[in-house]
Picture (cartoon, rainbow, N blue to C red):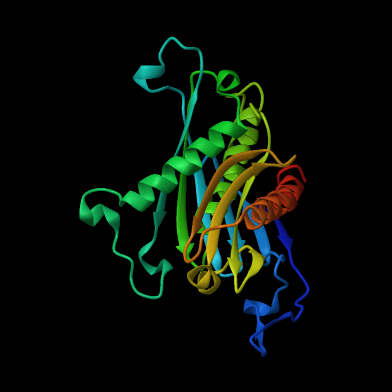
Amino acid sequence: MLRSFDFRFVPFVFFVVISGDAVMRTNGRKPQELRPLSFELDYLKFAAGSCLAQAGDTRVLAAASFEPSIPPWLEGKGQGWITAEYAMLPASTPGRNPRESRKGKPSARSQEISRLIGRSLRMGFDLKKLGENTFIVDCDVLQADGGTRTLSVCAGFCALYSACQNLQKQGLLQRIPLRQFIGAISVGIVNGEAYADLCYEEDSAAEVDANIVATGDGKLIELQMTAEREPLSDEQFSKLVSLGKEKTAEIIALMKNVLRG
């Protein structure tokens, strides 16, 4: 039975005055407002756990596969392993995105994002309590409109948590090896304003863009930040990090509702 939670925000028109011209943010959102966000668990029949996550027009399908074994280099250490793979499907962008398998290997971008997701998920679960088992979490972008890597972290976490729940019911895991809930969000400076949850149009125009992975209590796990035009001030840096932590906590609260509902 599919489990889902849909969080919708009431549209609100917000104007930022720049050089005398009124500019409305995409979809009429406030600068610090998230896009409509939803998580649907158990979307796939054969995966140990899965989650279809949607943030605005960005959609990510995450599937967690379970293997009762570990990589050779972990043998004898009494722990398990969690790894991730990220990919964008051909029709996820306006122009067809060629399959990376046709190129012979994943792109540098896909490899970097895969490692980001894997590092983040390992921070959320206790590898010792996982036992000598491995989870592989595949995050496929079905539709891309900004924030694909951060939504992949959230979808991957939900898929992995759901997999642990399902395997516990089957007697294959004694407990859910949870350390802490984690979430991720994109933030940036657009037209001099701090924005949360950037869509592609906003991300392309951002003076500063950042991807933040954090815990529900505001501890940072990953921070990727780039100034595109001018160097970042200390005030801007602090504002973006604070905004990212605040919105990540908001997302984690939604994730908890669907995972424990």
